[in-house]
Each structure stands twice: as structure tokens, then as C-alpha cells.
Image (cartoon, rainbow, N blue to C red; front, side, top):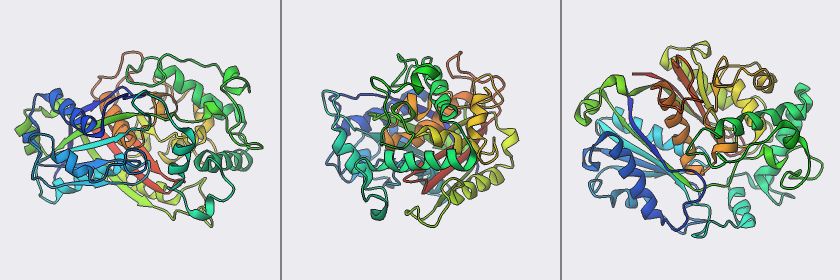
Length: 400
């Protein structure tokens, strides 16, 4: 099987894209990724674009046609993928699979989400409604904001089953805000919180659902943003003029989907996620012990804990403790979410999976901001989810 490499990564600053239209966003993503390596879009053989709210919030379909509208991308095999919050990761796998099928030697994976209007304002009720579409109808009953409510229940159950304190999960958010301070692309780079603030119910910080432990600071951000990765085979790297030592190998990857309904499955130990992560490690010929960089899908703080367990850095119920003990810090055992994670970096749904892989690649190339750079970064794992821990996309990366 051909080896696949990340040749280039580009992203917008996460937060507000203001008056940028969807065609503007797609064009900027491609142009930015190409500019990183001085290659024209015409050098790319294929592409895939991931987004989740293009119909419901942007009134735009056939995104593949917008990607094909970028000069140099016309008449190529391109597709749009949607896998809820795992859409970006799915777009990356789509390009990898195209390259392995012989549809080219180079390709671009783009992810984006435009969740705010041209003035940077958001309609919270509308966003809550359309994101609720990515859950099972039976799980929506009685929930005004579906996903915060679902994950508030997951948080409650995680704490009860594993005996985890609320403040231990809050510590994850505190650590991620501390990382975001040094990430110039992070939405919350100018905001810092203490554990006391994360635990105090006042001002912006409140319990999202009455009677459940999820607080505002436990939640990821509503975000505009885009990200793009150029992927290539060895032949493709040569064509693009990228040296192997300047690239990162996607050494292992896998995707798995559990039933959308939470009924009858253990979301605290998500079977599909575990299976996909194990398969990605197996393909790479690595184990969790080899990994000292990771980006996990912390749409809510409890997922930072569960994600730490999925990538194999902690046993079930011990994920939060890994953070509390300082092991997830950039200078810890494994730098997890050194980008700031979804909680502080931001969560532009379709871009999230692409950005996770891109940031991990930056770490392996030694190109992360100095304050966040993991020393001797050798291998990375990423875990991107969609829905109520339903869709899982996992990758394992190593320096080329």
C-alpha cells in the first residue's frame, strides 16, 4: 500500500469570518494550503470537502462544485462529505482513499463551517435546533438545546460511574484555555480562566441544563472557520516539490460508526471509537505508548476525558485524572489538545477534524508555537467524533 503524507496545512483564525461567503471560504482554504508550499491548485488531482450546516445555516448545497470552481480544480473527482462533527476527518479519509484507489497522487481535504452572520452574530436557538438534527429523534424529546443536554447527561453518568469530581472535568477546560493563549488561530486566545472561575456559577458561567453538571466553560465554542490539508503519495510529494522530511506521514487511520441512538450502548466506553483507534494504531505499527502528541474531540469537557481514554493514555474513568495530574500539558507525558481543543480553539464543525490533524502535523514538524511545542514530538493520535459519540475518525501520524 502506498504511503500517504501531509504536504501542507492551512487554516483561518477560528471565531468569526464576518462577510466571507461560502465560495470565498472554499477559495481561501485552497489558496492558503497551496501557498504554503508554492504549488498551484492545478497540481492537485482530487479533493473532498466536509461541512455539516451548509444547507441549514448557509443555504448552500453541492459544495464539491464550489471546490471545483477554484481555478485549477475544475473537472476533477471531488465530493462533499457530511458526518456531523466528524465531517472534516471524513474528508481527509476520503482523499486518502482516492489516492490509494489510484485517482491521483495529490489531493486536498477542506473543512469549513460558517455559523455566524456577516456581522459576527449568531442565532443560538437556530444553531441549537439544526445541530439537534444530528441526533436520533428519540433522544431529542424534552430537550431545548439537544447536544448540550445529551452531553450533560453523559457528564453526569461519567461522574457517577467513575466517581469523578466536577472540578476534575473543569480542569480540562482550564488547561485548554491556557494553551489557547499561545495559539494565534484560537478563538479564545485572549481569554484565560482559573479553576475557581470554571467552577463558580456567575456571569457567563452557568449550568446549561437545570439539575445537570454541564457548565458554560465545559462547552466548546460556536465558531466560524476553515482548514485545509494537502495530502500526497511519495510521487505526489516529488511533484509538489515537498521533501519527505518536511512532510508528515498519515501512518494509520480508521473510521467506525455506532448506532445514532444512545439506547442500548455504552457511550462512556464507545465501541466504535475504540475499534477505530485500535485499527489506526495497528495500521501504523504503533501503540499508545509511542504517542506523545494528541488532539481529541472535546466538544464538552467530559469528552476530553473520554477521548484521553480512547487514545489509550488512560484507563476507563481515569481520563480526567490524566489532565489533573498535568500529564496532558505540552511538557507532560503526552501533549493533548495543545491547540486549545474545541473548548478554547473553537469548533467550526466541518473544519474541526481537518484542524486536529493539521495541528498534530505541525507539532511533529516542530512548527507549533514555542510555548506549546511538545519536545521530541515523535508520533501523534487524533480522535474526531460526530453526533452523540456515534461517528469516529481516528488517525495516527509520524514525522516523514
